[in-house]
Amino acid sequence: MNTIFFTGNLGRDAETRSTQSGDVCSFSVAVRQGFNRDAPSEWYRCSIWGQRGQSLMTHLKKGAKVAVVGELSIGQYEGKAQYNVRVAEIDPFCGGKTEPERGEAKKPYDSGSSSWGDDSDSVPF
Image (tube, rainbow, N blue to C red; front, side, top):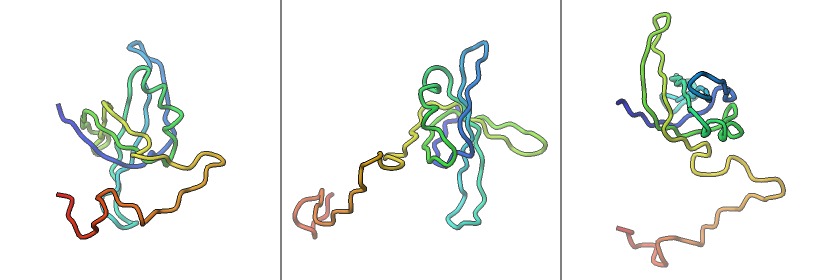
């Protein structure tokens, strides 16, 4: 099995369709191959089967940043590589909220608190 882990942005809203095997949620993720604005992107077609896909539909919207772990299969279509991922795990929030809830203010960065203790010269390892 080829396992892959990547983060990227959704190219469009997720779609659900019914098959004989059950419901499947499909979406595409763009992964930028570099750090500048003109860097090329690789596209991955992703699918989640069953109830998990249905429950994630509200979070999988165009432009959302996601982290995906799954099984990779590579095919060919008109001379181009097609990357298909059967999703095992997905984090549609990438470790945090995408935007604050209505009425909730953004919290400013607190430079006074440190999780490593009071001595700023000490190394945590």
